[in-house]
Image 1 (cartoon, rainbow, N blue to C red):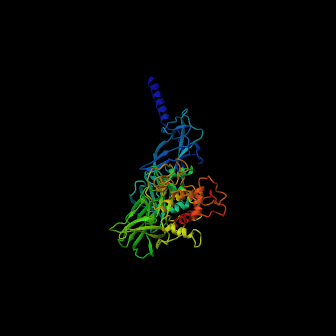
Image 2 (cartoon, rainbow, N blue to C red; image 1 turned 180 degrees about the horizontal axis):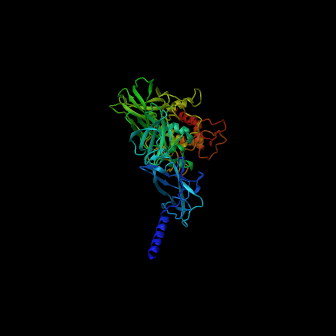
Image 3 (cartoon, one colour; image 1 turned 60 degrees about the vertical axis):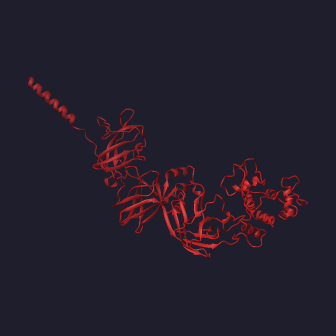
Length: 582
């Protein structure tokens, strides 16, 4: 009897163990044909709180699929149970990281399926009332770890990086359905958009992102870009767009052009190489030289980088046809000062580089100065005669032409014959008093600034040596008027508008101009009568106006008015100086 009871007890125990060993009826995985890893319900609708965010990756690694998941909500749940929500035990198969993200490794056979999953609440370890599924894209939609998704027959490229600020991690060309695509992944995360083309084209496009090439992230979070290529595409200009400066543009802190960095991709499919670096261009210019005794052998337009680049260069590489000249200067020889930038002509190669584009203030591409597509003066120093000779250059960038002409005595299109200031302008140019507002314009009707007036006076006086210190906070060393202002202060021509300000960019009024001239002349006494009703005795300019009338410098704006407070135009200033010098 005891033996029978022992057998029954043993049988019962075996049956109980067997019951424990039999798993509960498992939920089946369902098919999934989506393109991203995500969590869904059985009907395919999204699990909003668990929607994948930027930084989520899913990649094949050997026989497994490796997932790094960044959920929308990172606080409500702290784990995942793979199985049904009504399982007897909610084992935490995946535990969240401290930042609320989590990492999952599943067999590769789970690709293209949605696996039953139950999110576990951080508060009490329970799960949701609805069944969810971890949906994993099919294997052919995923990349290998550290790769962009495959898209066809692939040719891997050996990458050579030539700049430290823009490096490619890997690159390859794929061909599918007769179309080729170049894929380039970058080492950094600064650039997330490309523009295919030059800096000028990108700047013209502005913030129209529909013309940009949006970057994608591979399994390692690296940004890669797909560029369609055609036969013969060997040098591909692109503009990498800085996300940092793009965000600042959105906040109104800089221009959109500040985000544009011109680059270049040199593709050699036969050698299976890609050279990655800053934009470079060398364009041969067709030269028309209309100047006798001035030989030019060749000219090219050399460009490196763009306005935001530390190494930006846009220059005419000019090879002289003789050794008659040893130096060059952008501007007229008469304008050369002690701090002027003089360019050496290489004695052996006879090469000189003439900058034609530059930014006035680094970091602000909107301050780009371009001499292209307009006449500009270049002066060359003669070795034999020790003198500077001016030449008029016209660079047509689009047509790739360079025309070199003599500089006319008066080359201003806005100074016609017969105007009251015509002879005065010619005199001022000849004497080196002014070179005009541009190579072709004098702008006689523009107000003349205080800085320009004292500079004209200083040049007319023969550019006397400067003595004394600068008392003005708004007169920067290196400004074109710096020496002239110091001379004017030392000579008693002006004391500024205050003890610390000169206001060089403000328009100079007619009373100020004649007063400056009168003081520069030594404050000569005037004996004539005052013909002007608007010039009061005792005014600071009273004696100066009477002297100017007596000297024939001015006859006023009418027989009875001088208009002392009106801005003095550039045409009027050079005319006053010309008359005073006669």
